[in-house]
Image (cartoon, rainbow, N blue to C red; front, side):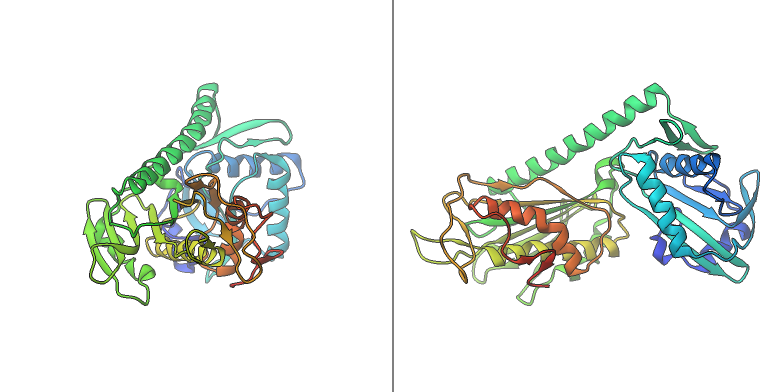
Length: 389
């Protein structure tokens, strides 16, 4: 949950001054603190760990330092004073890294100057790895409630653990159902015969809170998926569909299905190299399709104000007997020994549209695809630098 209704980097001074001006109260999603504490004493360090993990184990939220409150209602901004905020951020990150298990996926820090003083915000995302335990000075689990952080009961812990297991099951079920429809030619568009590269983008919230986004909103994001070729788009039962049709036929080269829960399905035909019976899958084209699909989808999610984390699922279908190849170096590769390559999920804790970051996120999945043809890893990375960045 984003307490300001937008990402932390978009929060303005006006958003901060509105807290006391409008008498905003502490809630499941917001905690006010007067000053940034000295985190060396045990009590202060434990309090910080408790507050952060409580938000992560619930619905997320923000701790705002520099707000004086009266019985939980914001009264005024009180400048937090001069700090080396970069040094402070590193100190807080180290405390969280060393004393929270499992590691928190994403915590953001930002100092915001207003005409009434400067505040410091710690924004915590709802965690897909919950429940998180603090290990200092002793092992404890906390969860956020309206009145503040509460120690988790045995029943609450059991529910949280089962929720994490259920999340994985829902993700697997979603993927299995979507791939089964594709392989049965029962997708939203008739894709050209042959191998297919499939990328599913599944926001965490779509698996938990099950949001419903109106199709009109989804249609506004279509521009991120329009190629240089001719495109068609239309509303459909699942949400909104963008296709790249093949002229004179009812088939398409690719399509993007934007689902009403915020998930995205990108399907693209893979054009084979060579001639039968020695055809091969061009690895460079597959990698570029995967990275481009993720980049376009992340841009669409940002426009739709869908927050991370998101799961990224990469699949290469109908490839039995073919091999992934880098023809510029060699066509000596091993045939793929199964019909479909369904790669384990990736988790993106931010949805930056930066190509280099996306390629690095996709690297484990791309390596797995190459390993299916006998290669140790993708030939298109030099360390963590992707050739096509």
